[in-house]
Image (cartoon, rainbow, N blue to C red; front, side, top):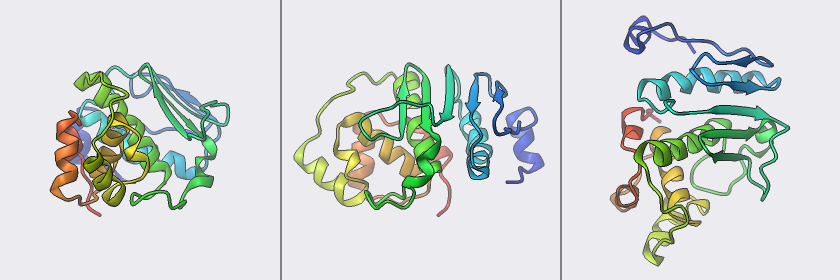
Length: 192
């Protein structure tokens, strides 16, 4: 992706590039990428400056994209203690129809970053809070089955959808607001 001069000026410094197979701290925290497909590099270079611009990278401890990530429970991404881990082979899960949202490297990264913004910046603490039956109905219809897991996954899935430019009905935005979804998602919303 080519970043415009005005975007570089808005960020206040040159946009760093990420090289595969190299550890980098160009965003202020270590990013370990173990020989990713070229598409992982593109995803990171596309979305990281947007996260940086809205302050979502503040407080991050590390990010790792690797086949060494042991996440468990058939998850392909994880956010724990200000660290994001994503299985390099998440590429094999792309297009799997588990949700209304597309499952892609980009949506996985955004989902995990929304967790960071929600838990670290907003300070949401009810990690395992249950959803109402009505909320679950709306989420499974308009967002994803996974978003019905609990309040924190609902926010991460809705936030990922917002950033990726999905248009949700008001009932979904109401759920996002009710559980303190990070409003900066609207600032980096992309046009679909």
